[in-house]
Length: 178
Image (tube, rainbow, N blue to C red; front, side, top):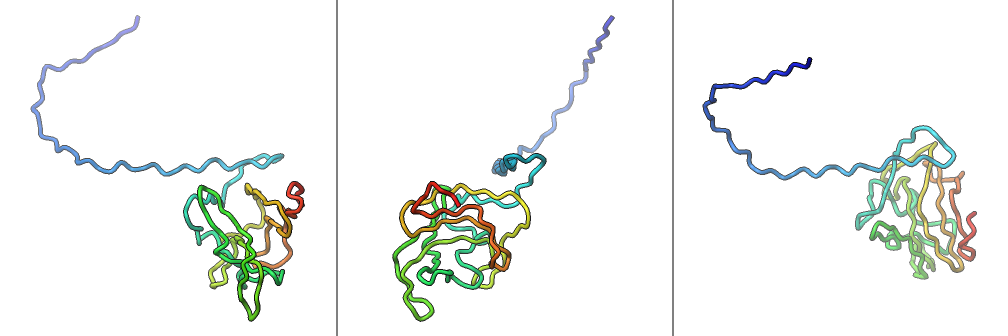
């Protein structure tokens, strides 16, 4: 048989005053990042070590610079990288190319463009992020047209070749990835 016991008390406790807690701000739980994606064709555990969803109104300077460590010049003498060609909004970063001449290094440079790097900045700021191995991805929409060459690639911490091309598109054929 099953036995149950119930205890009751005939003693009535003496009431005591308990202070009423003051209302406090309810803590907002920290946003839990989504689990790190597993690269297609891979298994095991992956740890997300760098991410940016571009949810602010300005670039996170702890993650990005808009020029190389050695300046905003490019290998193309007709192009200059400019922070004014980088804009954020709605979780998207936009890199714009313009026929907007600038006078730099004693000459007119006819085109400006935006770029992002996690390397060291031209102001002497340190490298923001570097990795030797890993899985790298970005959602990228590329423009069509002539003369544009959008790319997503990795360089050494010195920001010099060799480079690893993840994606390059010649904008005259935006459906073909090189």
